[in-house]
Image 1 (cartoon, rainbow, N blue to C red):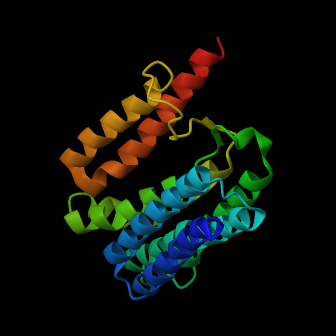
Image 2 (cartoon, rainbow, N blue to C red):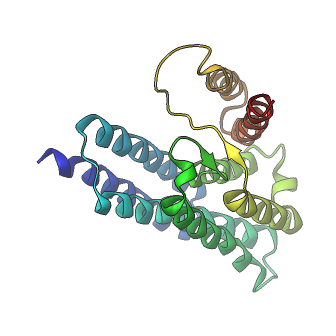
Length: 228
């Protein structure tokens, strides 16, 4: 029975992504973003439970990628599609550019499944991190402070292209999984967590792009130090 528990959690990830899609198509983007958060929690717990219960399986690995494709690939694409429609209502075809995120998310997930270099760390931005970045955009728009910058078709196109390329970039990034709590072994993880807490308290959801940027910078610094 226990071997089915992680897969059941993965299915909840998929269900959450599907519900989020309904809200995204209805242009309720902030609510849709909350379902990305819920999916991310399920995605974290299915892996954790699989390790704790030693319930690894090939079907679980494939199911996880399929669920992630919906929750962290298609759902963020639809959210950006809706932002494009808000930014350029006169453009009939430009909003479809948003689905580049879904395509590159699929490539990222397929690459992850066969790339033996990614057992400990990541190569390229993980799809959940990309989805979290995108869920922050409607919150920034709602705050009105930076709305005019986000609701700009050129800016949205740049965001779509850059985030899509980061998904498949040959960019080594450290994993957020703690194997132990030794400070020296997890220095950059602790720094990222501390920065994230401070930024989220001050800026709330608008902090997520800065958290992702910090993650990229800290990974670069860690890799530079390790290569010396």
